[in-house]
Structure formats: structure tokens, C-alpha cells
Image 1: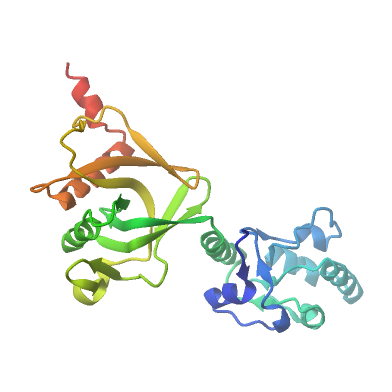
Image 2: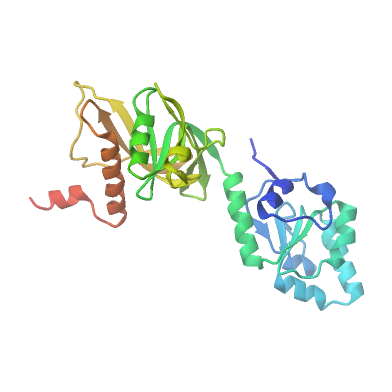
Length: 299
């Protein structure tokens, strides 16, 4: 199902108020990109992406200001006849020539002091996150030494308890019980909460804990890029566990490959400490150092 965002939701994020076209604020945005209508203002309308957010920047505004009143009226009428979804004018440029026709066509019109690059970055970042493909995963999401970690495992295995130990060590909780994964761009996977479980940790025997109320707001954050998938499992005496890890395993979420490791649990194992080491090890690998290769080269 195609995800959508209304123009109203976008401008709430941007903290802008429409100056025309109020009746069109419930129009739905489906594209994560924006469009600068330079070619359209010069009369070229082939393949015009009217479904994308339109941004009129410095160049477009200066061009429009250079036109005669008649030329300006003609090109704006033609532009608006192609039904752009909404229009943002950057750098507080004049919008008087757009107000009446935007009201007539219910096309939301906004102006902002932001430059076109700053405005487009804000819009694209917001749309990327809110229109991204997403997946709900049972688990816990933490940021440990700047490494985004997804902790998974069967119910009752100790995911939330491990998260509590990590929080005690100064690391940050993103989400407990349900983690929302969002694909941002071709290779980036973001982990976040579903807003209802934001800040809460569920601990059997204790109940719900509001983490920032106890540990301060430095103990939580809203999202993190997922770098490492860690599965916690009950120790199985019949199973062989590789202590050297000569091969790297991966798991796929939303067509994004994430490094995967399994940590078996039994009494005496400090799971939080092992998660910390796994995070540090991942960071070293990003710098090109692999412990197994170093070890193997010594023979």
C-alpha cells in the first residue's frame, strides 16, 4: 500500500502557515523528491512532475520578476493549469502574483525565509522518513557507542533486561518490544519507536519503566541507523558455537543487508558487556580492521 503524507502534516513539521490555497491542505504527497519549475516557467511542460512539491527559488523568482505583467500572467496561468500539488517560495520572495490563482485552484502556497537548498533538505528529509517502507520487528533497539543495534530473540530471553544494563552503562534506548524499521535511501535502515512505546521499557516482575524519568533524557533518542542485528538465544549444549567467527553472517530487512551475530545466553554471561564488545568490534571493522584476519595472519 502506497504511504502518503498530507501537505498539512508537512507544513506542521516546517512550522509554516499557508498564504493561499487553504482548501488544498489535505492533498496527499506520495513522492519523496521536490521539483524546481524553471523549465515550466520558460514554457516547457513535457514530463512535468506536478505530483512533487514545487519550490520556487532565487533563479525562478528573478526570472518571473523580469517579465512584463502580461508575460507573467500568461506563464503563471499555464503553469497552474498543470495542477502543481503545492508551491513553496524561498527567500521571502514576492508571491503576490500567485495568491489569487492559488486560491482559485485550491493550491497551497507558502513562503519562507529559508534558502531553496535549506528548504529542500528539510522537505526531502521529512518525506524520506515518513514515506519510507517500514517493517515492525519484535525486539529492542539501542544505540551503543554510536552503533545502532537491533536486539532480537524469543519472548522472555532477556532482551529488555540486557537493554536495562546497557542504559545503566550510559547507552541509549530507541524502542522496546516493537521496533519500527524504515528504509531511508538505497542502503540505510533506520530503527525507531511507534510513538506509543517511546521512552518505555517493559521488565517482567517490575512492570513498565519510564527510562528518561529515571535515567534522564540522555538515556533515550528517537531513532538510529541500524548497523548490527544481534540475536539472543538460550544456550544449547548440543549446538556448536563458533568462538572465532571466520565467516560474517548477514540478515536482510527491507532489502537492506545488516551484519548478524548470535549471542547464546547462560548463567554467568554478561550480555550487556558482550553487546558492547560487538559494537566496538563492528566499529573496528568499518575502519578496516578484522580480528580474525589479524589472528590468521600470525600463522
